[in-house]
Length: 198
Length: 331
Image 1 (cartoon, rainbow over the protein chains, first blue to last red):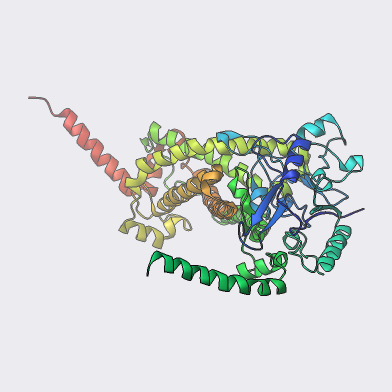
Image 2: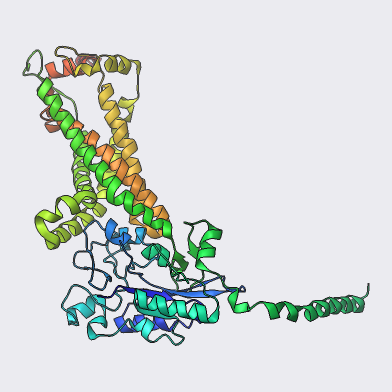
């Protein structure tokens, strides 16, 4: 089985926001909710870089560690998913997440957090693969169709890479060697404990 | 200097630098001079967050990577978990040991059969509102910390999810009557809970808790009860404040603030739960005649004389004064 990861090559990202749009459309993500967003660092300064960020599907995910109802689980592809039927919307995962991935589209008491929603690596939830119930709660299950996450698949500059961690790290490494520079595998150290060394 | 000379000077400066610039550019690839994750983290300090600009309305999403958020996982998942279990189990064990040694504290002179009003209906209403909401709040809160290791394996994920969801709703809504009752209790009893010299003597004699027949004098509340009063008031206020912050996270700030409030909330809750367990013990199985004070509100006179001697005198004098006044014929 593969160890799925995301890698955003910030030297290629042109901040077109297409990954954000694709994600919202593919999964019918509600207004005001972003499973993926593009953050621009040093905006307007020389050396400005943009990074597309969503759930990084961490190794030893902190969200899973703090969840009081243990609604998180890791798939065979090392994708971190959660069960919305068990989730109580306490918000603890959003306290612990280094990437601001957990979102709360539903509201509960006093207009605050309802059940959590986040990037599923386009692989749905605990319901049967590609079922209607799964689509309503978690969005499309592209992995079950043999496809990779849409955000990465349609990235026009191929900045956002998705796939097995070793393979995308090799692709990135080759790019850095070829062009002579690279701003790093953003978030890898926080998510996987180690970054891509060239 | 005229305007023209200024302009010419400025032009000269621009030209001089402009001509020098291509040489510099030829040596450096501008795309290469970008921010680098490792260098940025080093410049910011290893655990400082990396933030930038986002074009979506949620400006908090501009926080790109906050590695320090993960540290709380250990605190929440392990430290608070262990601490909460120790607070509850430790206190129960302590009380069991106390019961084994001391047994139920009896009324030394036996029940007299005559009663005296200790807590009126308003006091009892405030107490039981505070007590019942606290118990549900404490249990639903404790469930969030130890439920997944204690209850989840017993009843399964589905039932545990439903139970915890109801627990969350109960916790969020019952917090409000808890806070209202806390204010009531404070207003009703603060006058009786000001520390005084008598308390020192009471503490010196261990409240008579550990020895049969020892009964240090006390007014309406003895030193032990004053400790519980202030623990409940201060702890309750702390729980209320941090709880409101957790209930309205957008107003409270960022994840680091939520973590801070959650830790304080859980620590106070563990401490106060332990204190309240002791309070429940001494008010029920631990002492004969104590429950009546909050049950019917009427306590046995001998119980009152033993545990609140000065208060009984106060009540008796004010009663006889009232009687004297009532029996004075109107001229």
